[in-house]
Image (cartoon, rainbow, N blue to C red):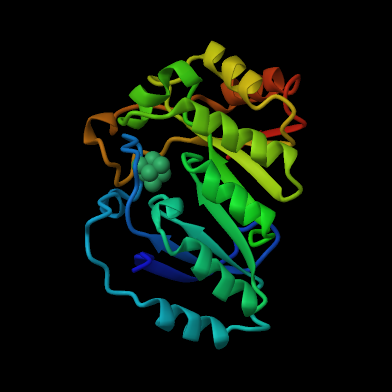
Length: 231
Ligand code: SF4
């Protein structure tokens, strides 16, 4: 049976899908264990969930003409074997779809892009490649990350890359390595670490950079990326 575990939904957001009013579906399970993860309850793929796909689709039917899109977030949505079929159902109702992903499953990403089933992709860039596994607390196939980046940059779907920034994890020169990794990208956001409800509580006293430091990092990255900002 195809798996699509919905851990929760948010009925409306103005913030998570650029220029659109959307609903969010949070999927259960992630193959990373980022210390700063704000959704630690979503990480265990084996955990049972209560939400039924049918209930969400029924909810969407009541929002046609009121919402523009659906954000599929997590957890890591591409772990769900039923992701493709779920998105097809959402698209049949004429909603735009944004996928949030950590980029570990380029095969599914490629299929979704090829079939024009997603309209926006937000991919996390966790670290320079040589420190990826350490920062996400899991063994990472770096080639999959690189392939996902290439698919996104060379594809025709709108996108953003983004990185959550802790001072203890990323030094100034790391951002240059990340810039090289996504060289040619059109949009990249640095996200301030907020020590709220995080997976690794030992990071709760950790800091992010100051606004002045973020401005300098953004300025330095503009040689690789068209638009760089922090939030
Ligand atoms: S922040 Fe890391 S651990 Fe949390 S959902 Fe995203 S990829 Fe998974």
